[in-house]
Image (cartoon, rainbow, N blue to C red):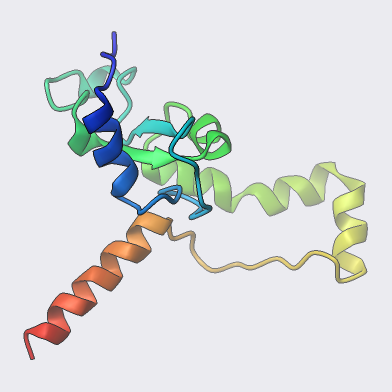
Length: 130
């Protein structure tokens, strides 16, 4: 069973992405943001002391947290990448929106917001070292 986070711990998790969802990057309010366990507590292979720690938590918007569910990051990434194909297969309105230029598909690999800000931080550190 997961423990209740303290206010300090919630603030630490929230600040990891400066008030943005770690996955999609949308701004999220402090009150009501979701705390996601990167490695899910329900996956028995991960049942150890390091699961229910702030280090294993990221801030998330509700929709990303619900969609990620208990999946690991690579499964979540794969699920997101498949959305356009599933929409094209199942939703005629989506196909109409594509044909009229109202929706544009992008086929670049999914990069989560937290990965982008980590890469930027590494770049800043590299430039300081020059």
